[in-house]
Length: 153
Image (cartoon, rainbow, N blue to C red):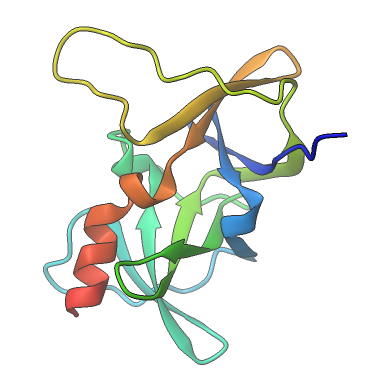
């Protein structure tokens, strides 16, 4: 029997995304965020997670969607990502978190190939869950610029 990959499914706007569960460290209710001067718009600031400063990125803004106010469903997903020379902790603000699940099929479809400047590099693949498309994020690629900024700080 083959082991199926597990994913944390989360919502941003009306879209459904997934992150590999092995990269998820914990899920927090929306904490107070300390703003950083002259930070990129998608870098909301820093939070304290048991004595460690963790930068928080707004997934909406990172994906090019308009910002939205926090609700009772807004969460910060603390991720453990592979950095250039060590593991990096990074918070990802999402509109809501659904569940840890396996996708309906073991194999992900590749990102669509379309003409133009869009490459889909931040997409690890497209899966399906209960008849809906789920975009599995390539977190290191998507958040690479924030990782670089965090290492430079």
